[in-house]
Image (cartoon, rainbow, N blue to C red; front, side):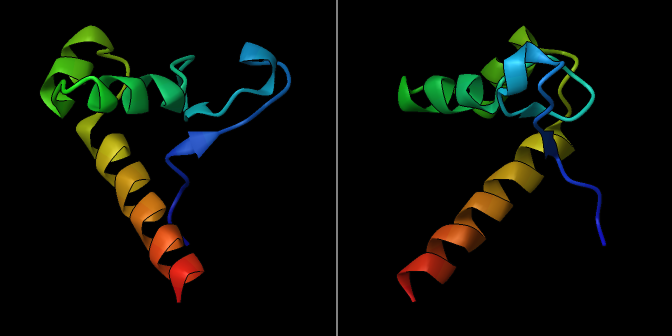
Length: 70
């Protein structure tokens, strides 16, 4: 099983979903994308997050959305 790209721990950011090993909320990525920013813009602002984590999160979100719609 692949390691999750996100984590939620009450001791880190009050349990907010963050990119694993960071204190960067996944909501921040979604806010960037909603505002028309790119993944590269996000990564430049949050160098502790890897491109692989972002892609894994987006792939997982896509798969969950498709499964829920089926």
